[in-house]
View 1 (tube, one colour):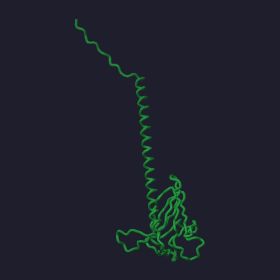
View 2 (cartoon, one colour):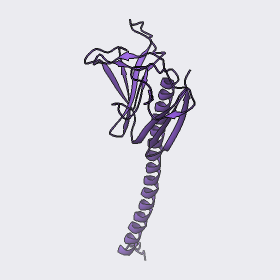
View 3 (cartoon, helix red, strand yellow):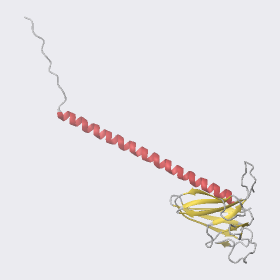
View 4 (spheres, helix red, strand yellow):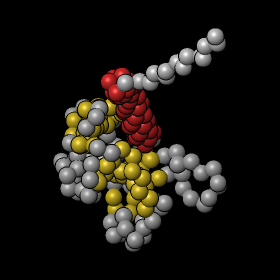
Length: 205
């Protein structure tokens, strides 16, 4: 007698097994997402720190180039008044303003290689200003370059020819209208939120 082949019953997953598998997948996914999120956050913070460091290095390099090339060349301001080669102090609008040498002229434009430069803080942003003409007419053409953000303070002091440090230049003891020349050295203190206080000393040539 021939037997009919037995039918093998198909067995699926139980609800409990499915729930356990889903729970394990959810835990593994959460762990993977947490690790990926940490890596992405670390990468973003590293990139931001590198960008801030590059901005600081650029600002410090530009300041150094300006300071070591200060020239003893007074100018006439936009009000027709004489201004010393270097002026700085609480009574002035900007933290420091001066004339510098070495303004490159690769295009061969008809202008001086001397440049009038100033630094100021504008809402915690360090700005470099310069004018296209040394002796300025009313409403002069000025270029403003933001250099560094989150700056808490910027200050300078000046070593005079007698070896005394001054908080302003020209010194308050100088006679009005007298030519006092340039200091022997300039000390700069720059305080930022991220890098703290940075001090630099520039010897003038």
